Image (cartoon, rainbow, N blue to C red):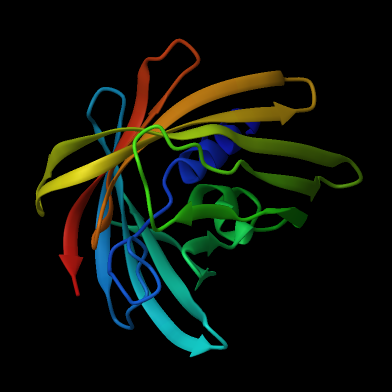
Length: 231
């Protein structure tokens, strides 16, 4: 179970999503009704599932734009196994994703009958990206009551930087993207520290087009690609 939870956290930390452009946000979806889909694969290219997102409840107040992301996940057989929602905001030239969003569908399914306490710092993405730019770290801390025993997990997203700019292809189209590299440092009782690198390909006006996660030796473990987009 612990290995599953670690993979779930890492996957979501590596896969912050965006799709529509607004006045405030250059990359993240802040338009009511925008919808998009990502298809995920394991390291060998085998289908794992699909995740559908819809942007709702967009509002502006005091120079801050807020929105809700509704998420539905289906497995490789097409069966819906989880749905959830999370919030994010855009203020000034920075988008902040609620750290609660780091609880992705696999993790929520594992914790469905468990009392948990989640704290952390939001993940930030500036609107103005340049190659070589360093981005702020983020973290999430989870304390789960496992029937009289508390299981603690801490995941830090560190060494975030804009690595390069390149064109990437997807079923939706070809896009010029910034490639953002990061490392997810995971600490869990009795498992020590583990560091898992990841990359996302981010396009202006679209958001994340592609994502890859790797093991500690740099081998690809899973990937996601944009397969549907409606604005």
